[in-house]
Image (cartoon, rainbow, N blue to C red; front, side):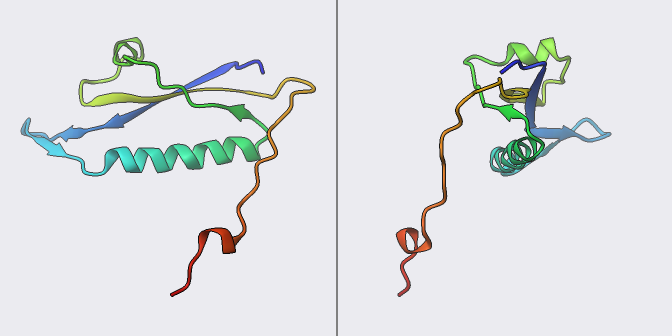
Length: 103
C-alpha cells in the first residue's frame, strides 16, 4: 500500500472558557475511539486501506501539527489504496449463537 495521506487523530481533554477556566470533557477516550472506528469503516467502504498506529511517546505530534495543549494525539492512521495483489484476511462475524446466551 502506498499511503499518500496520514491522519492524526487528537482527543480534546478540556475546553477553555472565555473567562479562562477549564471545562472538563468526560469519556473523551471512548468517544474518540468510537469515532475512529466509524472512520476506519468509512475508509474501507471507500476502497481505501488503513491501519492504526500508536507510537510512544506521541506528544511531539502536538507541536508538529500546531495543536493546543488541551489536545493529545490519540492515533496515527496512514491511508491509501491497497497494493495490487495484496491479500486481505478473511475476517467474518461470529454466528449469534456463539456470542449470545438467552436466560
